[in-house]
Image 1 (cartoon, rainbow, N blue to C red):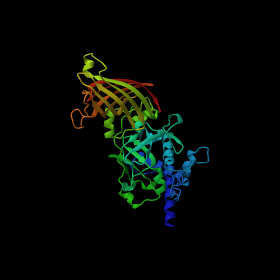
Image 2 (image 1 turned 90 degrees about the vertical axis):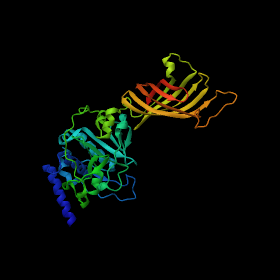
Image 3 (image 1 turned 180 degrees about the vertical axis):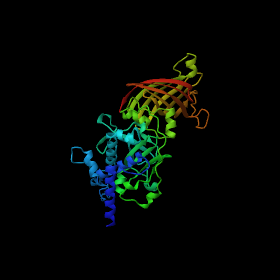
Image 4 (image 1 turned 120 degrees about the vertical axis):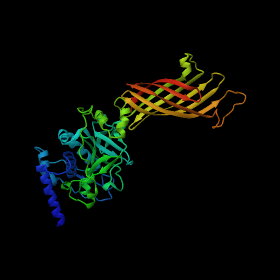
Length: 428
């Protein structure tokens, strides 16, 4: 009987919320995203079988469509039906994302910053959150539960720890929810799936490299365990951010450039603007290059007795971009007869769409064949070591299918040298 009274009380609260828009919480933005969490929970039911756990019963579905029948009737217009779903966490996240996308101007009025709303996801690494958007097939980078979605290279990956109940215990893994930025630049998150399964709004904000769960407004809750009182209230709305460069853009690939977590990531992006290669998340290029000693270039005395020839593979896959390759070097000047094979490994960071900076080095084998009568194989710790080493940095330019690179490097075969290369690339 007590449970029935609580349920009736909450149904009445929902009715008041829908008809009067009443709430007494922190600000219109936190009210709006909590309301979105319960609206999404009401139209969804979690399927343990579809989530891969068919040996379990479905969790309790606390929020059901009838709680918001009046609102759904208004939203459906001339239709007398509401689209519901029986699915998994991604479905909850997608339906919440769709609502903001459909009523973006209203959410902006409530305090959302421009177009900063994203589906947030995590695999097995609970220290890395991936932001994405539903998209058309031609632009998709993957498919989630039958839906085409797009990530945007390294900009989609945030080194933020996922949320956990009551800010304690295990962090979320293999899960999906929603990120929304408030007008003051603070990122908030809502988890409609956990909301539906637990009976109260599970939401919070991002601070100090992790998602912090906040205390929900009781008016939105069917259940209200006492532990919720130990959770912090959301931070008070601060000064609004100035409009961004992508404030009027409808291109999600441009919008992600301003989806920055305040703090360390913002400082990094002041130094390096990380953007995709010509709008492509995944690409590959083959580059043939040559290196000559710096003094040879300065003295205009280039010959093939002291040179390096390399073949590099430039690639970008989601959150990683690198230039790796193999290089042959020889030094037959001034009585030397040095030869070496070096394997290069370089990290790449894009500065602009067509220009990237890279840094790294290589290691390999080195041989000294100066004495033909008694070939000597040096020990690794000796000056003329068997180990070949190299350090390098440079720039690579990608224009359509063509690519080129220039670099400066140092190795223990030909010394300080400069190099250049040219090649071809393609999207994969």
